Each structure stands twice: as structure tokens, then as C-alpha cells.
Length: 125
View 1: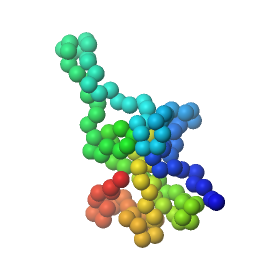
View 2: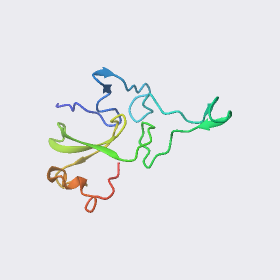
View 3: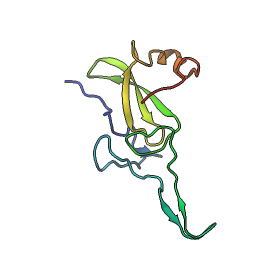
View 4: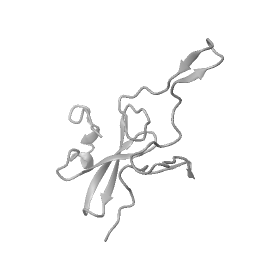
């Protein structure tokens, strides 16, 4: 039986600059590390006692990273035998979902219309 080289709920490319960087100890669709600092006390500057919060998302994928836009990667689904677009976290490339290119939600991928803000104004993960 054919197998894909990608898995839903896991990072598509867990490396950064050729070295393993992103880890997911809990398995698919769980938090991917490293994470941003949330509710962390700011001890020194500007005022002692302030709290640092880096988590301000438009979208919140399963990995826990706050993103403002999705990364779309064109791939092939060997199990279904068709081309797909992978909807990924823009930070760690966690694959949130996949859509078939032929007749799917993002059928215009091959013509670059997927990046046209008038035709595809919102891409849902």
C-alpha cells in the first residue's frame, strides 16, 4: 500500500537551516515546541511586574503558534492518488488539513489564483 511522506497533524518540515528544530512530543495535533512566551513576568524593563504575552493570533492551529496567514504547500497524496494542497502553520509547517486540487476548496492552486485576494479572500485551515 502506498504511503505519503507527510502526515496530518505533524510538521511538514521539522528542520530549520538543515537541523532538527521543531519537536512534537505529544504526537499528531498536539503542541509543537518551541513556543512563544505567554504570561511570563517581565522582571526588569520597563516596569517591574509587567507580563509578557507574545500570543496574539488571527488563526490558532493545533501546534499552538499564533499565525496571521496559512502556508499552502502543493503535494501529492499517494493513498488517494491525487494532488493536494496542504494547509500548514506558517511558523512550524504543522499540517492542519489537506484539500484535493481537483474540485476541492482550493481548485485554483495550479493557476496561482489561490493567492488572489478577491477570489480566495479567506483560506480556512
